[in-house]
Amino acid sequence: MRLLIKNAEIFDGDDENAKTGQVLVEGDTISAVLDGEAAGYTGEVLDAAGLTLSPGFIDTHSHNDFYAVLPEAHRYLRPFVEQGITTQVAGNCGFSIPGIDPDTPYAGDLFAFFAPNPDYKEVSAFSGWAAAVDRYSPVNMACLCGHGTIRTSLRGLGPGALTGAQMDAMEGLVERQLEAGAAGVSYGLMYDPGMYGGGEELLRLAKLAARHNKLITFHNRALSRFSTSYTELFGRAHNLRALDEVLEIAEKSGAKTHLSHIIFVGRSTWNTLDETIALIDDANRRGLDLSFDIYPFDFGASTITVALPSWYRGLAPEEKRKIPVRLRLRAEIFATRKLLGFGFDDVQVSYAGAAHPEYTGKRISEIARMKGIDQFSAYIGVIDETGPETTVIMYSYMNDHIIDVLSRHPRAAYMTDAWICDEGMQNRAAFGAFPKFLRLSREGKAETLGRMISKMTGEAARRFGLKNRGRIAPGCYADLVLFDRNRIAESGGEGPPVGLPHVIINGEFAVRDGVYLEKSSGRGLASG
Image (cartoon, rainbow, N blue to C red; front, side, top):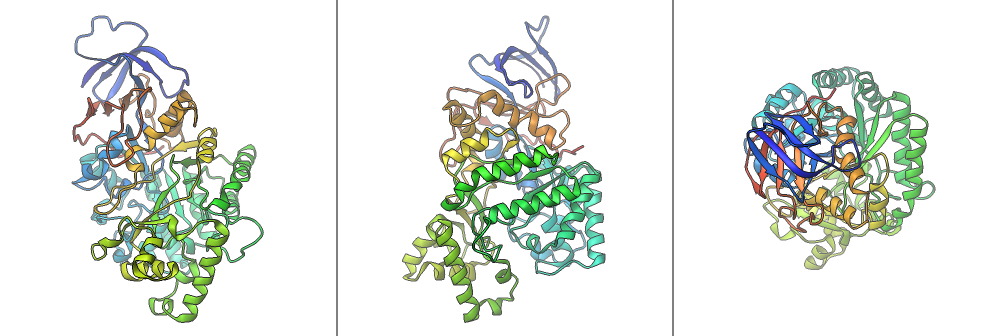
C-alpha cells in the first residue's frame, strides 16, 4: 500500500506532546514523517482532519497465542483489532504454545483452559508458531514461554518436583524458544501446575531468561490480602508475600521482571495499594527493573478453580469428595471470603460447558438460590459437575481510584487479559479495554493522553523487545490507529468501540471507516 495520511494530530509513541504533519506509508513501512506538504506525491491520500494518529496499541498481556494459529483466527481476534490493538504479547500466566514438548504423553492435560485446541505438534516450536501467525492472524503476536504448559508437557498437571532429567529437558525447550525469538518466560503461580514449581525450578528458568536478556512475567501466587495459597490467615497480607516471592526471584536471577495484572481482589485488599506501589518503586530504585500491566475494569476472567487451595487441587478425585476434606475446604473458603470482603456473589459463571447452559451468566449466589442449597455447596457442585475448564468473571478486583493511580505509574503497561469464547459470556475487555483507557484519560480519571499513548505503544515495544514497532518514525512498521479523542469510548457491550474508524497493520487497512476487513496481515514477532 502507498498512502499519505494528512491533517491528523500525531502522537509518535515517543514524544508525549502532539505534533502536526503528514505520514507517508509505503508497503509495510512508514517511509517519511513530514512537517509540511508531501511535494510531488501521487497516490492515495487519507485526510484525517479531526482525528488523532497514534502507533497501533500494544496489548502487553494476552492469551491469544492459542487462537492466532487457527484458520478461523479472525473469529477470535477481530474485537482486539477493532479496538486499535495491532500487536499482542501472548503466552502469559504460565500458559503458552511455544515450548511444549511435541512428543508429550500428557496432551490431554494441556488445553483444559483454552479452546479450541490447536495442533500443538505443528506450532510447539516458536518458529512454527510464528509461521502460523503469519498465515492466519489479523494482529501481530509476540509470545512468552509458559512455565506451566511446558511443565505439563513433561510431567502432567499433578504436584511434585521435576526430576533432574525433566528440569534439563524444560531448560532445553525454553532456551530453544528464547533463541528463536520468544519474549521471555511466564509463570502462573496460582494455577496448576505452576503452583507446584519449587524455588529452584523457578529460579533456573529466570536465570536462563536473564542470560538471554529476556523478561520473566508473573501471575503472582496471591492477588488478595487473604488467599488459599498460604495457610497463615494473619500477619503480612498474602498479596504482599506473593510480591516478596517475585522480588526475590528477580533479585537472585537479575532478570527483567514484569508483574501480570496488578489487581486487588476483595474489598479488604484495596488498602494494600500504597504498600504494593512502595515495593515496586523500591525494587526499581535498587535496580531490579520491575514493571506491571493493568486493565481498566473492576473484574477479570479466570477459571472456577483458581480460588481453591493447592493442597485440595493436588488430591485425587475420590479424596476430594471425602467428608473431612470437604469440611476443611468449606472452613478455609468461608474464613478467606469473610476476611477478604469477596463473596460468591462476586463470581459469575461465563461458561460451564454444553451440558449446563443454565449456569451461564449466573453468579454462584444465584445458582445456590436456584438449587435451594448453600453457596459453598453450589460452588463445589458446579466444579464437580463441569470440571476445572469452567470459566468465570470475578468482580471486586479494583475500584476507580486504584485504576486511576495505577494507570499513572511510570512503570505501568496496558492490556486486555481477554479472549473470545466459543460459547457463553464474553469478557468485555476483549471489546473495549484500550478505548476505555482513552475515555478515562479524557475525563481526567487516568493518565494524560500523550503519556498514555507512549505507554501503550513505544514503551511497550521497548519493554518486550519488539524492534521498529510502537513508533511513528521512518523505517518503523506501519501499525497505526486513527481515533477521535473527543468521542472514543468502549461500547459497553460486545461490540466495536465508538470513535475509532481506522486501523492499519503492517501497511494494510484492517479497519477502514469502521468496517473490519478480515485481512490476515499480522505477523509472528521475534523479540530481541
